Length: 230
Image (cartoon, rainbow, N blue to C red; front, side, top):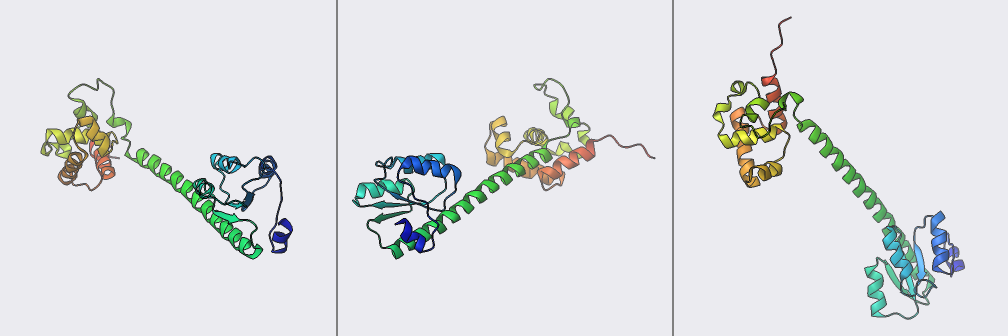
């Protein structure tokens, strides 16, 4: 069968056992694997199962001389992309191999894209956290249980007209100044996330900002000591 596939334009490497296949795969990347279900070392699909555990993205086309519903279902469960009864017609087998190759290439592209999206998401989260972390001047030392902690974290609060805020809104503002998100604030204050978001919207309106980042920027600019004239 190897010669027939070569004649159809495939670059083919033939092995006789699962161990030989493992050895070959250590040094080469293959576009598709054409496996006999009764290949020594694969009688119970051990070799195919091992591919799944290794996380290899290589499509498998399985050949069998004794098709059964059980083996077909198990093969599909393990990610086998096609199940061919022997002896196959070479032109039909070539079509199936080509479809498997295309499918494997697409899956590799999608997997790579997924990994890059995850990395980008982590980078965005890191950048967001960095931007939302309050400057050291807003986090003084002291007893965190002190009731005046909010006032000391945000000096000169009267400049921001914080008298407009309710006691709960001041608590939410204090957590916002620490860079906390709505879910964290809700857990800290023992209220629902929707309640926290309602308070945040009210704070934004009263302090005339439209985002947490803008709020932090205003806190910094309004509470920083004025610069002496030059």
